[in-house]
Length: 133
Ligand SMILES: [Zn+2]
Image 1: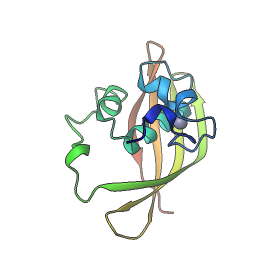
Image 2: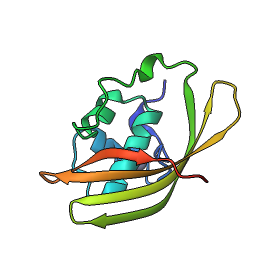
Image 3: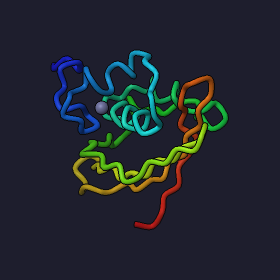
């Protein structure tokens, strides 16, 4: 099994690699922007880091569990494309397209506009909308 700290590029697509991109955030570093947090959350889905996904989810909208470990069919994440990132004080939005496939199914696109809020210097995922694409 490959150690995740050697992943290059990073699961979010950054050529710098996991150890210089999403890895430190998964270990507790503060995400400087909502886009950085969003990318690290995508990587957390790839790596099934449910603890990280819940920790970066705002308590007002956070589910009790994501059950990533037992999800069937399990998604294979194929790539991330961030389209837009806007910050306004303590609020931000990130529009992105993630590509994934469930089991042996065909690849599909997940187009989401996510909202984020910053509290005590940390960004949190609030919720998402799924526009027609
Ligand atoms: Zn990354």
